[in-house]
Image (cartoon, rainbow, N blue to C red; front, side, top):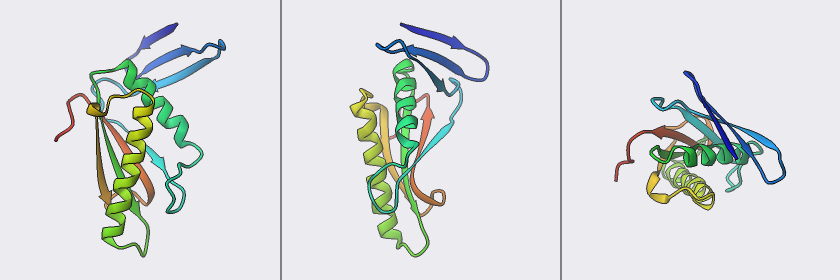
Length: 137
């Protein structure tokens, strides 16, 4: 059973699992171009502890809003890292998150993976941006 409340600021959804547990899903407003961030641990391709929850929430929102698109922008802004290495890692981080979303049944056509390299926020991870239009090819 899915219950949906659409308010002015955002959309909250209660998903009732097979175990009867309610999970709140916080979706960005329709007109919003909001972002979420997922961080990786060191130079490994492992999410930090909060990433799975964020990715699950994004997947749940994407299922509720099939018209929305996602741009997944990887970044590696760490002191002492070369620009080429940062671009390469940013691309891998973005691809990992796109794969994680596709495993959760989000169509690859709805997502675009790009790398910001050292131009992203401080640290290692991805910025996920919602939009109402298809990503650029």
